[in-house]
Image (tube, rainbow, N blue to C red; front, side):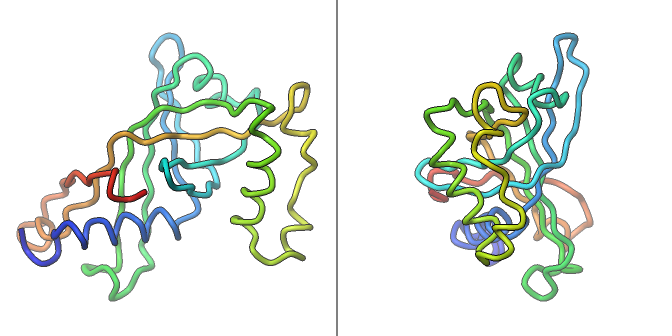
Length: 175
């Protein structure tokens, strides 16, 4: 391993992407195996590692998660400048299990999601939807993805021969 692919650097890169990207493109599938991709605004929670977002209950990806909870996701940034040569880009892919959060978890997640997503209280106030929107009978739900596999773009390989491949990251070290 070169200096760029040391375990510490991989974990630093993965954490930077998880903590700063804000959007993930999720891939789900329906009953016939037809894929569906949706980009959602998430916050990351640790111990265990979880990505939290909310969506309409009738959105295609929400229906797919209800029926087939395995999903994958991709997070990518191109604005990292010298933090991530070449070209300021970095990306990760995840594989994990998704679910709608039940009512008994919604209140705590509602508060946490909005606090993490909108640290400024005035901005938070303008974006925050009422908790009732996320409870049984509401049009939305909070969802979580619990990743069990994660890969980063192998920047060293890219520098060497411009081959676009991934390198596995130990998720247990990210919590």
